[in-house]
Image (tube, rainbow, N blue to C red; front, side):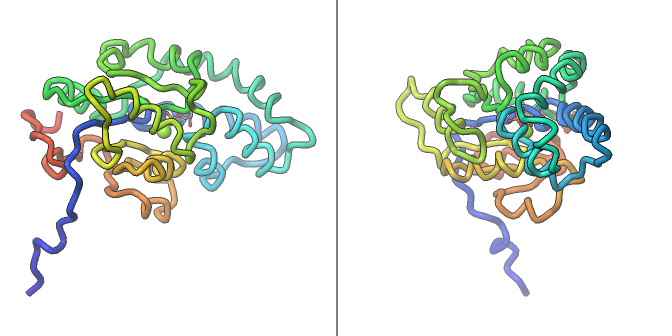
Length: 242
Ligand SMILES: O=P(O)(O)OC[C@H](O)CO
Ligand SMILES: [Mg+2]
């Protein structure tokens, strides 16, 4: 008979947490998808999840280059022009951003237990402000936020820059070992960035994302509501999945 304890992964105890934002804490990835579908329709092309997977999590200009090059429209629309075109539509959509299921519960739990947590998002300052304007109560609990236009973030995800910068900003109490940091991510580039930074990653992917992208993550969940803190050496939730 198989020893059931052999199937339980050995995990590093977690002392600090870093959250991604778009598609993980906030339901904003669908806004990008909608707008990109509209722009591509003008060129009689369709937006698909192969392209989505390459763009999500990246800094705006990096994602824009992928968009115009992969779709073959770069002769008609430059990456910079694409960003200008989508901006007006995004600016109208972002203020209605909603939290993903379980985001508020997990953040309030970490805050109550005194586990330090921060944010590492490819979004730049202007978009961050628009997306979070209904959610100041949650985002103000972050120890710090590191944004895509932060001078320390030379390259976007999958470069480890943003997660290493976020780790450094916890450090008033002494250096934090990346292996004791748990990252929550939805995007393939973000999962890779966290692993490149030497951290553990819980991935909460959109169900439309190809399953092959799950392999790099330490754990894959359908929802933040399914997170079990005890598996990571953290104290248990005191509520029941609400
Ligand atoms: O997923 P995030 O929070 O790093 O955001 C990245 C882009 O702004 C959206 O894909
Ligand atoms: Mg994301």
